Length: 592
Image 1 (cartoon, rainbow, N blue to C red):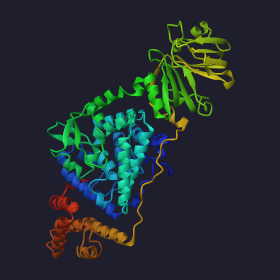
Image 2: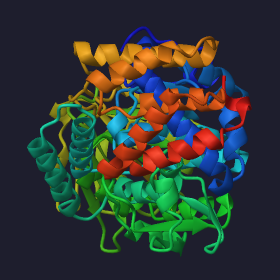
Image 3: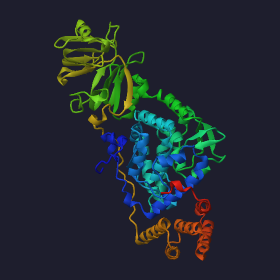
Image 4: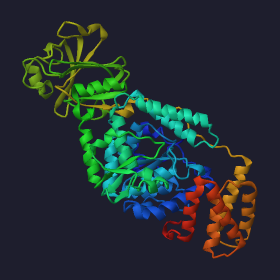
């Protein structure tokens, strides 16, 4: 990562270090004249069509997000605009891990892929790009109810359990998206990548919390509709940024279903048109459905259920005791009693203790390098949980610094040692440290031996929450899953560089006006050396038409484009829509 630039945006400035690692420079100067033409074409099409089918704040939202039709936005422009509504934006290299993506949302920062789709993928690309992220996500954030949902979703998603299979699928999708945006990608390689994505999707096992949450995210944030089943409007970024699917999604053959918690049962394929979409009557309904799902998650349920999910994830997780003490590490063991209640937890490898998401002094990964274990529950014969006893009450029961004590838990676990220190905060006893301590289970098996050193016993009747990740992420310095693959950056040959210059000449002429005669020279070169291109020709025709030039050149270009629409079916809709925009130009207020 290059030197961090917060763009003067408070949301971006507040990002923690573990999220900053994904940020890359936008490198605005790398956008080519063709890239700007692709942006302009998509934005003009969106503005023309979406003003009738998008959720109503979308069009004014473009302006509020710092977007114009004429050029790709700079990150500085977007941050200047988004700061006014309490959001920010950063650029990243393609797909980033879902957990990191969610956490960015919680910090109210939009994650924007720096790249832009190729001309041949102008209608839709499975790869994240600046059109999808900025023209799709940013405008709708201007709606307060929606951006509250987006941020709240991020805060829930950041706590979700994810599995090794989730990351394998993420890597497969990332690799496929990169391949599809490579201009010289081998078809066999693309086919193999698609098959790998399908294989990963079909062999996920029981879906993790993150996998299920990603479905809710897909059917709302990416592909959501709002309103009535009979007359829905688009708010999902995947639809708003796809000039193909924004039209096809409104067709009768795409099923429209009411958005409920049942959406978690619908998987999705990022490479295909979605067979059904979900319609929410209000954004509040999105929050209600999210709450329903959140109530099933480990961070809300805690206990044996949460610990088992943490063990299955094989990732760094945090268990929160009812006293407020947080134990972070890779959990590998938990024990329950006959009633299924948690009585013992254990981590392996580097672990840490925290309170209120701040690591306790002296209780980081270096100190607890070999793991951590502790009982959970109440002492036998004590009605009140140990964490609720004041110091004087602890002393009454013999739990006093400098004294040896035997603690018998209801579970049968026994802790026998010399009390070295007692840690309390927020009115709760949270940690008791022993020397010369032995811990045994009800069968006399050793859980901790005095020769292992000091014993730190967590205090708490229950585990109230379990979530993925460390409590104090900055102190724990997690090794976040980060892909080793990078997006492809094209090295242009001489012919392509020449084509860039032709596009720039047309762009300059549109901006500055003047004699249109030299456009004929551009057309001649296009015909001689770049006959596969259609967008530059369409932009020349637009200039001639808007200046009411009845010229042989305009007739030649129109005939060429009409013939290309016939001979190249994949271009037919693009060219036809281009003709429509020439005769029905967009309003000028977004043309900067």
